[in-house]
Image (tube, rainbow, N blue to C red; front, side, top):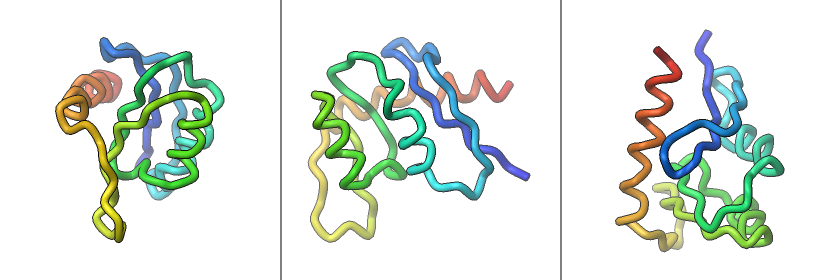
Length: 100
């Protein structure tokens, strides 16, 4: 059985909160579980799996700007800061270290 790690980390790639689910569970479950534990932040970087209207609205209600590209099947494209999104590699490196 596979697992998914849903992680909140800071801008340096240090983990702040972790939620583990089985591999077949969608990213929305992890996003919903960690939503209330988000620290006071200006931006949230997420991958395409977190592109949901309810999630974008919840972040906006908290005063957080989202940098999440739209899913491929979305009919209207989502605007996001592509330069800022490249910083997600810190998150990927941190997840790789957790796996080790």
